[in-house]
Length: 82
Length: 380
Image 1 (tube, rainbow over the protein chains, first blue to last red):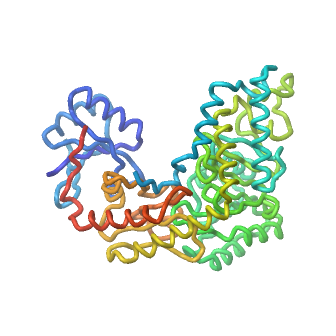
Image 2: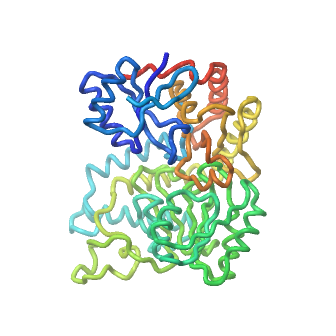
Image 3: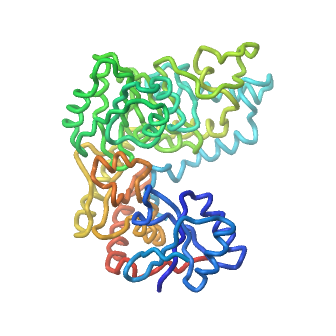
């Protein structure tokens, strides 16, 4: 099963994003960014199921702008702008 | 939960720490302010804490400054010693609590890099770099990433001979190794209260053997008619209301530690570390970082696996670790692990051999599955 991961530089902004998504009925889980996605060392992000990714992107752009969006599947991560 | 992140903060805390902090919230007022018994008792508590720290670290109690963290203490120390263009020599294992304040001062930072776990090479580098005119030397006692016990006593000798003020970051050693201000002759030693000393977060000590500049000015309950901060310790560096519940908890933590014995804790953590290293070395994909001079912290990484994703998987299995750069990119740069980061297991006095064994067992199970096969599905 694949997943989307929206990256943030800091935990507070990531939490704002998670709260905004949950308020809109989009489940999201906060996690630390995988090393391969953290260019400046250490970041945070939100896992979202693919079916909700577009909706999540719209909400986050409005409420808590993320850095980048990635899709993770069996092959690993690739950037997936939404 | 199997907690192996004592390098971040110690958990659990002794019951006495929790009880002391809770009691303090309900009973103690602010020290050095009112005339009530509750204020007096708070003042006595702080004094007892300074006495306890003074005994533990061989430092006069009035030179024990209460801080909110080691980072707070290091900022005071470093900004007292270094300014724009001043030459400062640091080890290649330093935490961002050293690197970032120095960067902000504009100091000319020289890194005595050494090689990981090679104390002889590190001393050679310090010997070469500690030239006349060096404003400060900064060394972490124990690497928060790799557990390497750096040769601070020998570095202290170099500094004393050359008249260079020494700052020691005892974040990972206070409470589990001997830290002796008098023997080291250090200018400053900074430490948190919430790691090896088993106190609450929001506490720490800065042992001051050198004139310090204020980082913050405000009320001290002394010389109030004066606009300048008092010129005597500890008041000069302690403005604002103290973290009294934190102090109460920290004193209880230190008393617990004294009852168990720092040597006992040190030997236990070292043994747990050695056992874990032996077990990790049996897993083919795992690269373990270890050496002779190692305290109770082990870093490892797994070939072709993202360490943060792996730590997440382990956390889902109830194993608490820390993965990534550990706020110490310089240490990773020195060790050659900057691109991948590492997973760190850091032991505390309440860990057991079984904890390390369980980590390895669950790690092996996770490694049997492809990295991206199981996506994160719990998105509540």
